[in-house]
Every structure is written in structure tokens, then in C-alpha cells.
Length: 167
Figure 1: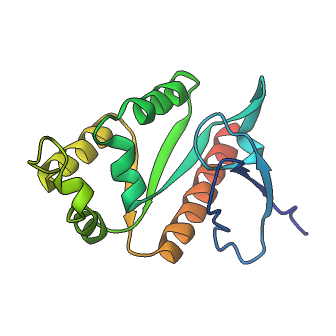
Figure 2 (figure 1 turned 45 degrees about the horizontal axis):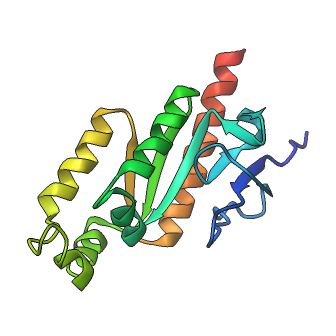
Figure 3 (figure 1 turned 180 degrees about the horizontal axis):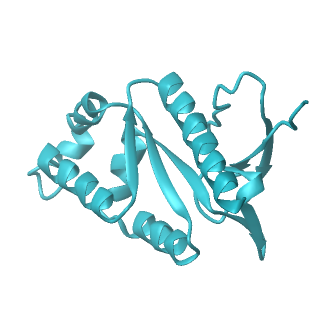
């Protein structure tokens, strides 16, 4: 018995798209997602001009992550609130480890942050912890390859759980 290949929706705003290292097991379709970057089409519903996923991967590189939350996290928090209001479970997968985040913090533009005091690791660490407490999961990956593989595995695990629950 052959199973149809799952379709992964990839947000059209994604600048450097991943292919999630699925070994050709999936079909990719570029669409507008309400929030996030990658979702299984099977668990998305259309709302206006965008697809609303029930579970979504939000991909961030270390520098993008810091830029999204510091100095002003307003846009990123609004994105989370928007997804939460629609019942979207968000998973942040960072294309970088804690070491990469710390290395990024040593770059000049972060050292000028907060009136020359600079952005410090305890602030970043506390922010990550507060998101986890709020139910937003963040996974740091040591490489892009690991991040893609982890994202694919998380989507497949969520799909398996949802299919079992619907039986």
C-alpha cells in the first residue's frame, strides 16, 4: 500500500527556504501562512488570504532571532499573539546553538545596544525561558542540517499524534 506524499506548506516570505531533508518524501508548496514558515497542508485551514496551520515551525537564524526580540520584540510578540488567538501551536527552531547566539552577541551592533551597555546573555536566556513558560517552544540546533531534520521530525510527530486523536 502506497501512502500519498505529504504536502508541506512553506511561507512565501521565507527568504532562504529549507527543504527539511525529507529524502523526497514530501511535496512543497509555497503559500501565504498566517504565521510561521513551515506547516503540513493536511492540518491547515484557509482564512481570508492565508493558510492557518494548527502546528507551525518558525525558523530563525541566530542573528535573526536576536533581531526579532531585541531591542523591540513587538513584531515577534504580535506574531505569536496572532497565532495563539487562532489556536496555532508554534515551535521556534533556531539555526544555531547557544554558542552561535553568544558569538552573535559579541558583534559590534549588539555591543552598542542599551546605551552602550550591550545586550548580555542573561537577558537573552531569560527571554528564551519566558517564552518556554508561555508555551512557545524553542529548539537550538547546532547546524542547519540538524535544524531542518528536527523540524521535519517535529511536524511528522505532530501529524501522527493528530491522526491518532481523530480516530
